[in-house]
Length: 284
Image (cartoon, rainbow, N blue to C red; front, side):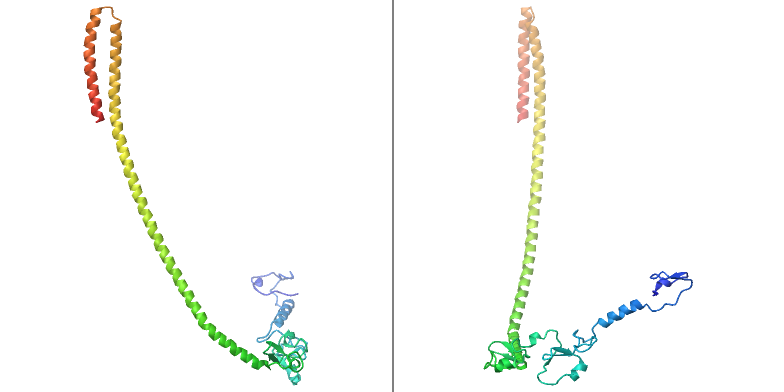
């Protein structure tokens, strides 16, 4: 049975295997875990070696990385089978690939060796000699590739200044955006300070006006209170006089009524004049 090593076996007995549950009185010797070892070996064998393209040799039974692919044979070969492979010019060798269909002519099933400049396509020998591209201006793929690379280099040289100008334009826009942000921040601060000052002034004005209103209210309240007190006094005096006059009206002695009436009239006129003078003074 497989035994698992590790800290599980630390300490004193009895011991038991956490996988097979077998118990031991003493700490057992740990044999190799064959199941786990086989899994690890299969995993490691499936990993590609450094420089391995992942494309296996067609002729090897085990996974041996291919170093070349033959377009004619449509096979990939390792170093061993490459030495045994045909050296004929018909056997065109390329870098290892799984898809060799795009490396061969779809019409003649031959390797693509030339480039037709008139139709901008890669062609085989049969296309050049007897096919649709007969009489066209063609070149070897290597030569045509170098010419195209040179053209692309010139395009790159033309694009570099444009890219640099684009970068400078982007930097200018970024700088402009920063300036706009700073200006907006300054304007925001200015407007905030302006409205804060306006609020402070309005609050001060509100307090002053409310204070004036309160003062006027207190002043008028005192004046009105005094006037009301005077009127209450006058009302009480008038009530008293009315009762006295009513008593006179109920008297039977004419002499008493006539004498009391004249005295009452003079006294009443004098007091009414005093009250009127006080009211006028309070109003002013």
